[in-house]
Image 1 (cartoon, rainbow, N blue to C red):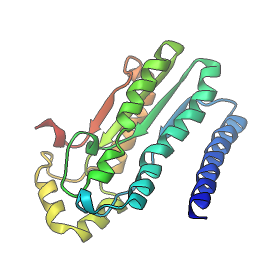
Image 2: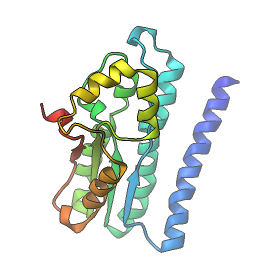
Image 3: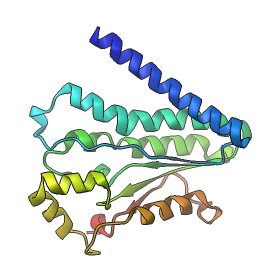
Length: 198
């Protein structure tokens, strides 16, 4: 029964994504740009102590949802042979942190982005990703509250000396969607205050 329920939830999620994209095209006539932005954090735990349930939960949100959105966006964009997709990943795709293996494993978003970008570049569709660092969001506020020592160490390694702002992430996404980024294909842009530069 539990497996059947999980299958039902997965089918429902895919139907919702399909309907969302189709409603967008029905309302506006076409889909020019899309930002796939979904993500959750997993409690810090040693890899050997993590559960399959938690792995599946985080993977479904952080990776599968991005793939589902990209799939249905591409079905629309390839009809017109134009469009831009930007997906949200994380610096977790480039760095390791103890206790974060499950969350960091889902940053296959970067590999998904690069492979899909190569498939569709010649068809007029640009696909890229962003890799935000430590951004001032509710999720980061909860992490700071739950793990103050860990977060203090992470913040010490922010060369810019502060948390990122959501507006700064939005600006990077808008630039990647603009003609000014017309020659950018399959790139995962760091928006991290220099965190991954050292």
